Amino acid sequence: MIRRLLLAIAALTLLAGCENQPLKEQHGCVRPKVIAFTAAWCGPCREAKPYLIQVEAAGVEVEIVDIDEHPESARQSGVTSVPTFFVYVCGKKAVRTQDITVVVALTRFGCK
Image 1: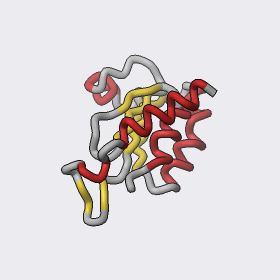
Image 2: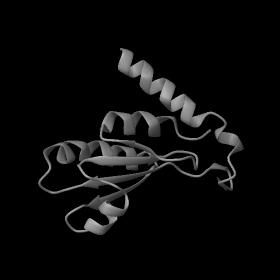
Image 3: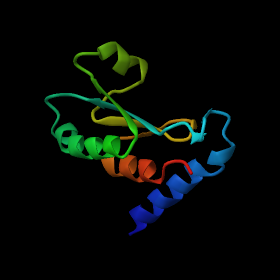
Image 4: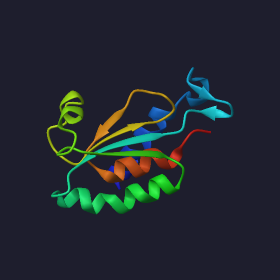
């Protein structure tokens, strides 16, 4: 219960003033985007994949980066463990998390 409350507060804080952001498309904010750093051998990464598919189906841009295939991208982003997710909502600074439920919660709100 406390975790859900904290997620809701984090999402609302992230989205506060969304409609005033300078990065706009024609009809609102820039679409949310998720960059997921994963690996084929990672169990939690495999468990997160169905959630990423659902998030993408909801209209969120999802980019999956395999750290074994793109080690330089992981290094440049400071990724030292997987899964690691970067969530961009409304053109604001990315939220970095290793919890897929945070990704789902943040992208569920979208931009109004």
